[in-house]
Each structure stands twice: as structure tokens, then as C-alpha cells.
Length: 204
Image (spheres, rainbow, N blue to C red):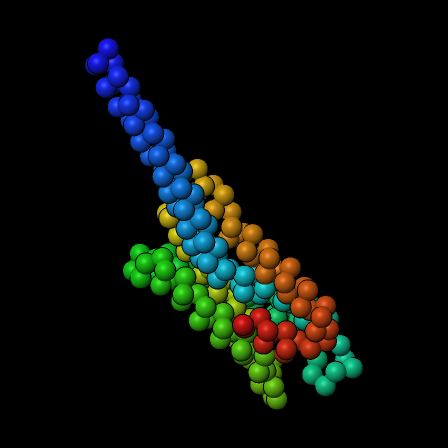
């Protein structure tokens, strides 16, 4: 009997210890998930501005082609404004491949902001005789950023996530770009005919 009374408390303490370990594991697991989500969101925020580039021409071209404004473009010029970003996007994709291996995921993600910011600022400040050239150049750089944004965000999200969450995280780049398109449409409605202001806000 004496041995039995001694073993019961030991079993109880072991059970409580196991329960405590399970609770700690659950808390740690939740913390890891939250950290992964936070880093995934931050990494994919970089894809919003390039996503805005995809919808910019649809919002800005009606105003740019309006002959009632001081500056307006011809149909052929408008087609170049719409398509020039598509020319530079594959170049951005090619550049990103080598940059990922050379500079790493995080630095490549940060680098994406450089052509994006430059492109939007060129469009926003386009004025005078160089207006059309500045718009072309701005569209080229924003297209370059669009190509550069997709790969590093997807790779980074896949590498830092667990197997269970990886499938969800790698879709976030597409979601971020879609949000960018939606955002540029909303801003286009709010700012109406001010395409320069629209580009300036997109730079932010």
C-alpha cells in the first residue's frame, strides 16, 4: 500500500507536466503561425504598387485621350502607354532570378521599390515638351517593377512558411497584385481626371 500511495502523486505530476507541455507547444505553434503571417503580409505588400501599374492605363488613358485637356495623346501614343509596361515586365522577371541568388530574398524585395518609385514619380512629374517621353519612361520602370515583384515575394513566402501554410502563402502575391488593381480603380474614381495625382499617390 505504501508503494501505491507513493506512485499515484508521481503519475499525477507526470500527467500535469505533459498537459503543460502540450499547452506550451500550442502557444508556441500559434506564435509561429502569427509570425509567418506577419512576414508573409509584409513581403507581399511590395506587390501592391506593381499591381496598380497593371490597372493604371485603363484609368488614365480616357483622360489622356480627352482633347478638351491641354495635353492629350493620339491613339497610337495611347497604345504605347498601355503596352510599354508589358515590354519591360519580362525583363524584370529575368533580372530577379539572378538577383535572388546574388543578393538574397529580402534585399531583392527592397530593390523592387526603386524602379516602382522612379516610374511613378516620372509619370507624376511629367510636364512640358517631355511629358510623353516621361510617361513612356515611367511606364517602362513600373513595368520593370511588376516583373521584379512577383518572384521574390513568392519564393520568400514559400521558404519561410511551414508545409501546411505554404500553399496559402504563395497565393498572396497574386492577391496583392489584384488588390493593387482594385486600389488604382478606386483612386481613379476618387481623383477623376487628375492622372498626375493618381501616379503621385501610387508612388506612396
